[in-house]
Image (cartoon, rainbow, N blue to C red):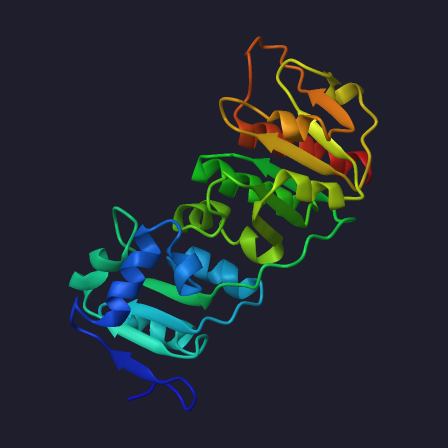
Length: 261
């Protein structure tokens, strides 16, 4: 059976099917994508964002109840379509309320480090929501390369993918990078700190540059701090001691973008 001349359709009804088992790992194990070489995108919003960025799914999966509605608008976008019973959705979902569709994509090949690209460096940023939010800010404000040092949350994990809302597919992402690899950068590194450096709004910001965002509790580590060309802090007239790392990243990247526009 097929929904069109080029897109085969298969139906799966058993939770013991190898595909269901593979999707379960992709959706619930934060690093399974490294072993399987594939990504699981859940929900129509994230799937649409991937398509808008030029991605071609190797597989699209739909619930039985959603397939009649989805066939016309979604049935042609993947190499293959899979339909499963609604009762199987919790088996492959990382959400409390499972979505009625998802995509499987091949994991993009990690690019080499671009020494001259406007970049964001993530130094052991742990929270998936923070990482995804920073990726969105990087994409929005023209920082096309994100360098995740060892100890940072897995960039392609399901939770980071959801928080990134499609930003992944417009960025060059490097993960598991050692601090000494940053010596290849030709652009200056700017480090954020809650207590050290001059205020952001008083700085002349270089561009392109590499903004460094540190661990939620410990901040930027010593190895990265030693490589900084500039240290800045964000003025907080309301009296808060520090900002959430994703909020700080959005402010800093926006400041860079408007300074040079």
